[in-house]
Length: 47
Image 1 (tube, rainbow, N blue to C red):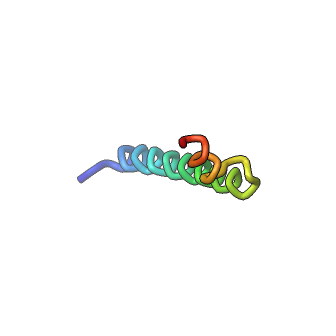
Image 2: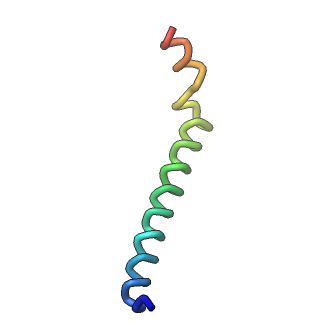
């Protein structure tokens, strides 16, 4: 059976990764909402 300190470390790592993903997702969605990013512009530039 795993010890509590090991489980706390794994939990902390998962929580940190989860928060980083949530922050990144929030920034990307906010960028799309503000118009900083645009899928249409990327398609036009690629042609």
